[in-house]
Image (cartoon, rainbow, N blue to C red; front, side, top):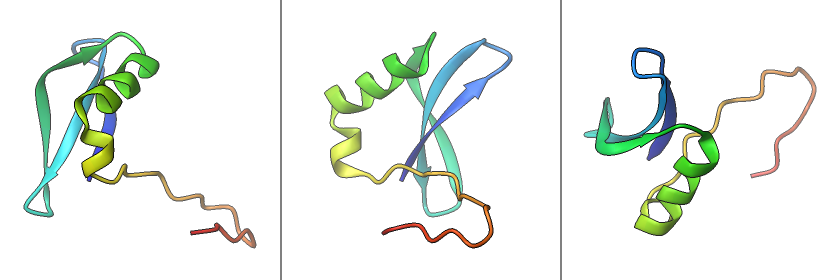
Length: 67
């Protein structure tokens, strides 16, 4: 699983991979000024083809999310 995280210290977007099911690790070379560039990086490197993206849960009551 992977996710996009905004690092406020670096003022940049980073890509993180889930290791061993509990630890999030940064892809060290991946720092981006915008989210579009980060998504492009995951597409070109193949991360998005081999891993699932962590998507935030929608907490709206009474709305079903299609799987």
